[in-house]
Image (cartoon, rainbow, N blue to C red; front, side):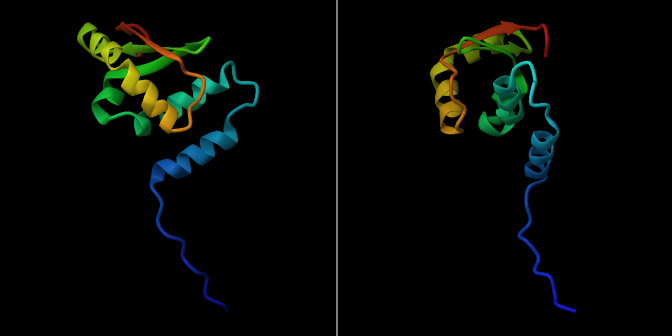
Length: 105
């Protein structure tokens, strides 16, 4: 019996992303937001990813719900950096970031 070659280990997140992509409905309300939400934790620095969650994307404006007002202000000041990280990750179409404290997180 021929021996099967083992593949290099992959991060568990990669497998989950592939599974989610396969299971995601094609007619999701906003596929761009879904992709952005899935990649948020790997695209952003850990502290930023924990402090805010993308909740809406309309006309290129990303709304991020933050755990408190301090983080909302901090992320707003980091807007250019956040946009650059999204673009570097291949997430196109986001032209501005707006934040809000509390709410849907």
